[in-house]
Length: 256
Image (cartoon, rainbow, N blue to C red; front, side):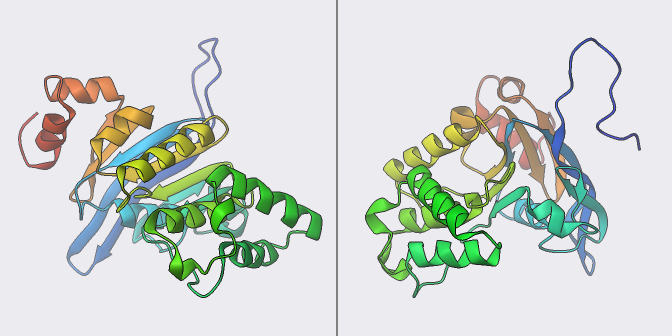
C-alpha cells in the first residue's frame, strides 16, 4: 500500500495525516468487533466517527490509541505506529475514553497535579498547564471539590482537562457528550470548536446534531466495517436531505 503521505504534485500542499487506521481488525474468537478499518484524519480536521451502538467505534479508537492490540493492521498517531512506538506517539495524543476513569476521592486540581507529575512536567510547566486547562474546560468553580461529588458534565470536563494537559496535537474523544444535558452539550461543542482551531480531532458519536454542529468530515462504521467516509453534505444527500435517513440506510442493511 502506498504511503498515505505521498501525493502527486498538483501545486497545492497536502495536509499531514495525524490519525491513521490501516487495516485495523479485532477478533474475539469468531466475532469481529472491527474488520479491515482504514481511514485517515489530516492535520487540522475535526472528523465525526459515527455508528450505532455496538458498531465497533470504541474498539477502533482503543486500537488507534494503542490501548488494545489489533488482531490485524495498525494505527498511527502523528506518524508513529502505536504498536511499535506507543510512548512517542502518546506524546502527541490526548485520549478521552467513554466514561473515562477518574479518581473519585481526588479533586480535579490534585488529579491534574498527579497526571502532570506522571508526565514528568517541571514545577513551572505544571502550574502553567494546569491553569491553562482549567480555563479551557471552565473548571475553576469545582477545582477543590471531590470528583465523586461532581455532576456528569463536570466529570466530562475533568476528563477532557487531563487529555489536554500535555498540549497534544491530536485528540481522540469517545462519546464526550454522552449523558449530558442540552446546556452541557452546548458547552462541550463550544470547547470542541475552539480546540479544532489548533488540533486534529476524531470525535466518536451517534448524535447526528453534533455532526452538523462541529464536523468537517464523517467516517461511519457499521458491524465493524467502514460504510461511509466523506463530507456532511454528501452524507445528507444519501438520505435525500435527511441525515437521520442517511444513517438508517447505511446502518440498517438498506441498499444505498
